[in-house]
Image 1 (cartoon, each protein chain N blue to C red):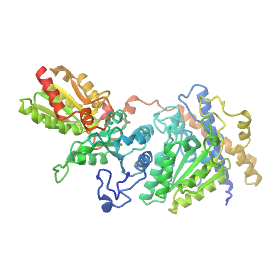
Image 2: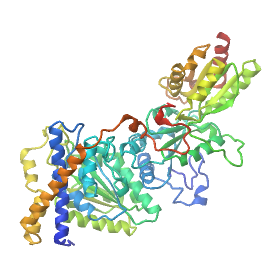
Image 3: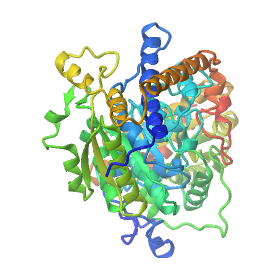
Image 4: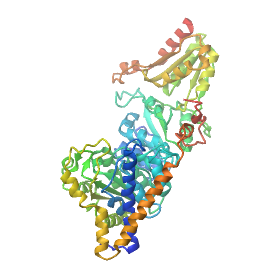
Length: 336
Length: 301
């Protein structure tokens, strides 16, 4: 059942997708100009998955994310300025310059964090689900992960525990067709990755991950089910990353034609066209939304570049949380 | 939560009948999924719970390493202090049960090497309880390595367990000729050795750091300055072991100038723990080994 959004809702969806894309284009540009260091993994082309999925969430719901997590964070409501500041390694970034692209989190709003380890977020999501259940709240943890993580033991263990305990977890597998260079079709000899969920007694479904409403509706059904206490669900969203895995990628494992074919299925252009088709919005409104997102990103970059550099002293004081039962102040180096 | 902590009572009987008192929500049996269990602990800790994860043998921590080292230890740091991970991990370690190489290791040095973790090694029942309570009050991930041989012993315990601090060691026995720093089961063996050495006119001070990270180095240094000799005893293999860190800490400190003898380590042999009971005993320091080394240190220097 696809519920058509109002014009305002439709434009908000568009705005989120544009924010993700333009954020990442800005990151790519800053990186290319030598203003950003480290590495980053771009999700350009995959924006409909986090945008659609997070529409199904409410306050108090959690997400876990991946190394390709900018989109998840933005869709869950992360502040663009603090996110950009983090990537620019500033003290006013989400992680005070300690985490960077792969560790952006906004724990207060339920974003338990991106994760540099493939599959690392899956058992953590099960734990958040267990916590929701034991605390008697009706919140759900949405576990974003990639097709690459399906080969990890963590994937299997998390699905096993979530199933056994009927945990309120929705596993959203972003199948962008490649685990780095390994095609998911070659790696997993099932028609759909979601077919594997049946082996855990978890309902699985595959959706077009470039169709933002299809993602929203599938995740909404799964979230509703989890809130009713009926346990986890597994949703595979088929999508594609237009860019390489990371900066090291020479794209030797796929063809220009394949990339172009997926670019022709741009989730943002598609959603804009759908809204025009049903005369929900006008061209002018679409342009205005894109321009507004561009302005959001400009402001985020300004915020980020104006941040202070982090200090070693603050870093060393931030390794352990302050403890009422610790005999020493580790940060001061009194003990090893 | 952990494997067989419910009706089974735990592989070593630690949880016993707790599930009857606390229910199966809180005393939670899991599948055999160490990585999954540990991650579930991390996720629960991140979202307001105080989980205790039991890993049936500390050797199986290898299966859970990503969640311990890459997730639990680093999350507070990586997210800039937005969250903490008040996770307590309990795991039995050590040899002496004939369980051979995959069920008998002493892996504490691995974990003490990871910033963000705290590592506890109790040597008796009172400390096991007091340190567990301290670990539960700590907002950081704390790994408690319990020696399997201690499970089989009986101890007198006080009505109320004294409050313990993580990073506060204990002088088990006072002495003047030699300091022995020992961990876990070796604290007991060192104490027995000290008893025998006393009969031989050698006065030994025995120190139990109790937590190896954070480490109560000041307590050790003060003792070394007092006695002028130090023997460092651990069950784990010598190379890159915890006592190497203690030795370095002494060598780097002014207490080094108070030494009358070289710092000496008595550790497990650099071998996987073997099955044969003779070989197993020979692989880790026993009371007689401690007596021999201590006597040599005092007599030669």
